[in-house]
Image 1 (cartoon, helix red, strand yellow):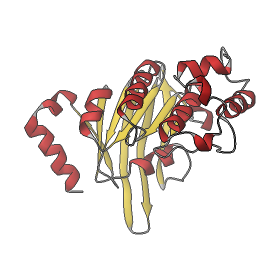
Image 2 (cartoon, rainbow, N blue to C red):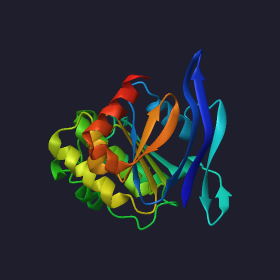
Image 3 (cartoon, one colour):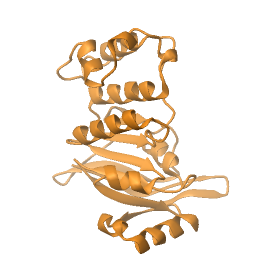
Length: 232
């Protein structure tokens, strides 16, 4: 399966944020979407998730030469600032999500099995989500996407403000979860992209460009990438 974006564009007033986004993503890989702050990474994700309407272009799945449309159920989205219903406990939220998606979830497990999988302590499972740390809220966002098994997983800088232990746990989860889907991980931190991702894609001047990952180990090449981002 491939996820293909063709000539996607988006502007806000006179500012052209996405100019001509054109790229094909392969299933089973984590793509690092590398770009400076303000380059348009979140705008791209919001267009793909249909949170905002693109001005032009299209995106679709392709498998064995056959195209199919992308629906809301195909996409999982983990935000950099986690959004969870803070009036529910972790267990209530998890149970509610499973109940409303029961027909589409395969091999449903108990809530405690899911919590164990995410290394969420027993004493935290019945706490209100408003009392969860930033990292724990991010884990809950990631958990519902693991349960939903989307074809595309969009990760909008989810590790930036996490402590080192939770960040490492999240990276390992992403590695084990990448099979069977396209994972696009946005970041402005080059070393993080190199550590986690199979492929690197640069968003600059409103366009996507593949970057040979081996080249990023070269000091001079890194400097060229940084200069390109700075020159936006």
